[in-house]
Amino acid sequence: MSKELIGNQTLGQIYEKYKQSPAGQILSQRTRWDRFKTQDTTNENWIKIIGLDADNLRHCLVIYGITDWFISQQNNSDMPIKFNKQEKNLLLLTALSHDIPEGMTAKGDVSLEFKTDQDEQEELALVEKAIVNALDESCNRQQIASEIKKCLEDKNSKLGHAFNAIENIGYIRTALIAWKNNDNSNPALAANLKLITNNVLINSIPKLTEFSKTYFPIKRYLHQQRQIITQAFNMDLSHFEAYGPDSCTSYYQKFLSIKPLWEDWIQQNPEC
Image (cartoon, rainbow, N blue to C red; front, side, top):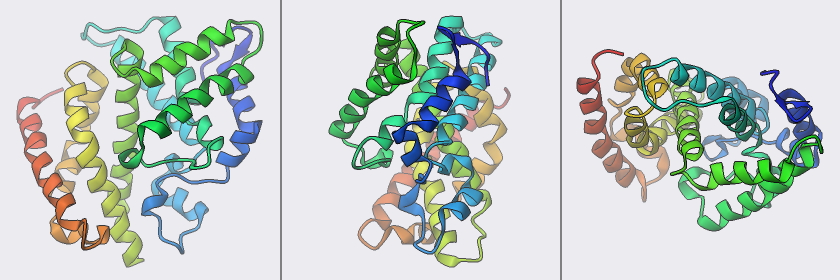
């Protein structure tokens, strides 16, 4: 973890405060992507199958790592947008902070697909409090908390746009892990792992192909993963049956509508 300071604290020290807080303790006992988890799958096994992104607390560390990589790749690229030291620190602190409110709300982690504006506003109101509590008086903690809230709230701002891109890389990273592990011997779990993949492709590929025009690391990542993404886009209707009879066809139609977008992106980006 970066040794850069926020006031007199390292980012590692700030994360430890989150970890030891009541919200952090709650998150450490929860998993993410639970919508796709079978009842007989323990939290420990779920994390083994789809990685640390499934751990509600350590997910923040996963996004931290992606953020650090993203900034380094972008700053060393030919693309015009760059991030200075202050912006880097704010993005890294956003990565560590962004899901802490999920340990403070009744609903906890809400799937992106079903998160309402009210859910979003409730979390945003709590994120400032969590950040202020984790920072000491060696920095302007209220200002930093406000800037991070803006980053999470305003996806058209420079940092908000970048963090949205980073989060979508996190989603597809987990989706591809799920795809690689979908030969699980438990048929119900294997079917649900396929749902993770096709659900993320539906929701994130349109965003990521657009983000790739601005951010070199997005373009590079998609290019590196193009074979497995293309393979996943060959799913047929049977891979959507676990959504249930009322939703299966509609999800599949959405999936088919996104596939040409991906195929066009591949043709337009033969090299990276």
